[in-house]
Image 1: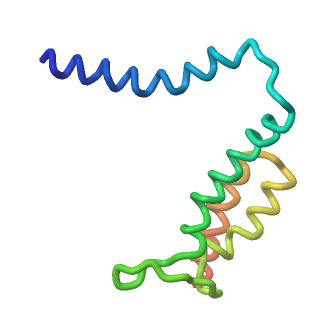
Image 2: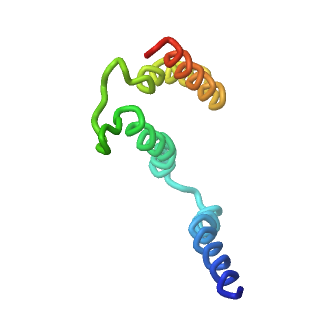
Length: 110
């Protein structure tokens, strides 16, 4: 039982310290404008890195293959979804629209 408690405490520290340490060290400082602009680019870069493989690759016979065709429902749905997200700036609205678009394309036989 004590091994489990030590494991939980260790995992808590490993998770909490990397998040809290920069917050504590940088909260009283004014960061350079260039660094702040760089930080603002991290979420879009991470989102692009997560989405690109799902939109552009397909698994065929256990191998990931580049799939840029009209049969790629997710890629087709991503185009109008990107436009809706750009103009509305609503996360949930964009996700709902994207899901509805994928459903509609599948229903229409794409």
